[in-house]
Length: 154
Image (tube, rainbow, N blue to C red; front, side, top):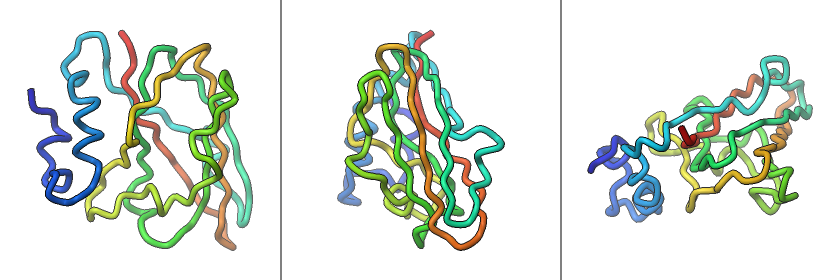
């Protein structure tokens, strides 16, 4: 079966990027009745406006058994670095990145509003508790609405 991500012309093997390989790992689940796609907003409404050079954090509860396979920040954040972020699996005391990363590394530069996919899916285990942290790098307040892309078990 072909998934919508596989139809996108910017994710083919010829672009020398790993997106097509990452899609191949999750595409069998696209039509699996055991999973449904779900977008999770990482920051609550009050925390989405981060003050100049400020910090915000929020706890996230993701259903155990879910599979996290990417982030989506939107095309408005593409280009210059505006904020750094980190996500920690509280149950395992495991940070998804070795240090906070700039959104410019994960904002997709393909000219379309396309998500950034992980090189391999991340399984949610335990109670599914995560901590999302963000650091504003600008000298002005910034509205940040990060989305986590998951497949949730039915």
